[in-house]
Image 1 (cartoon, rainbow, N blue to C red):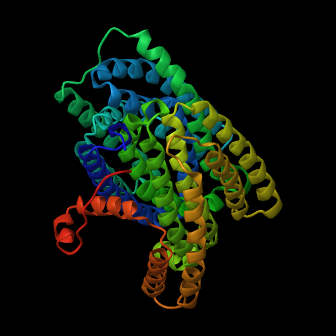
Image 2: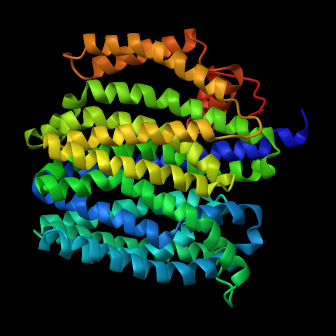
Image 3: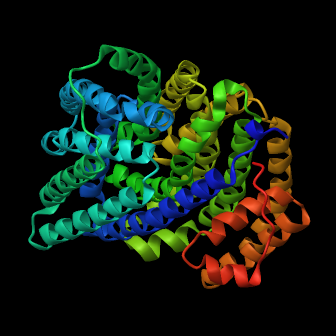
Length: 503
């Protein structure tokens, strides 16, 4: 095999280290956010939490407009040409500031259709569009240089300060006003730190504004921005429609389930793909390097291996998760979560191909696929909400739409070294393994929650090993990832492999 078709040992180690750092940071920060949501939802109650979820849905869509998808393009391009970082920063600074203004106006325009309370909090939360703008630019530029340790530390500290300030505000009786105030204050600190880190590394905006950088950045980002907006609108349309049709309390139940859905995606999917993104971009090589296709294939298979047991466990044990965590007031959320987690599993798998198409500069294809998915989702959501009068109708609509979207992504993705048959074979083997795993969990379901989880984990692991779902080179990559964790030295005493990186 030629050198161009093989990842160098240094790059492979760096990729493994990046994944490990981001995974650790994600576990800490997302774990803290999980705990915070478990405190916040019962503290506010379903109705106020429904307001919180509705404003959050408006906010993430506005943020997609403000960022305009430029971050991923900048990471890709600056990873290839680090000296251009300052020019890209200036281009983002000009364009994203104007976009944030339009996003803020649009967000508050949409909020007019809701209650006065939702409108007021939407106006307040929208201030973060301008504050986070600078922090996100600094974050993307640090990621482009693969400075994962600093970005991870900043994100952890930011989350902790945000939670601490919000908790103090709630204790003082400020309610949602205090929650949004804490978000603004902590976001300001995050932006200052991330910008300062880039300055200290010698990366600063380079003036004047360079149209040769800005124009292709805007053009290449536009399909991605619209695709991102459609994706987020797709993910949050159920909450926005539920509030308008069924009211804020029902949205509160849906939001509680959605928090777990979002957290699982962030922890097990987003963090891995963000860490792998610079390496994928470098090894794409205009589509000529088979390493790129093999990496996409392996990432897709890993997502299947991770997503299936997660979906089975949370779906079967939904009531044992939601009620002890949030209380009887959120009992209806268990039925919603039981369905929503399958949407999560499908999304985790599809995210791999979204990243792959982005690196291939296939943003327009993503746009068409996501646009079709959103149209299908909105139509089905409105129909099922009106007909059933139940938030589960919105979830079923989302699942149907996501299956259609991921099916199109999977069948349309092409790449040198990519073998769709291997992913399909892995999926079939895992479905066979899922049957005894689900049966074991159902048999132990009435026991203490750890028993069905451990029993099903044993059955699933045995099935994966006997079914040869993982190949020898897959074990090599897993070994390198595990060995790069903080306790990796201890692991290597008992598990040793002569690792050759050929993925």
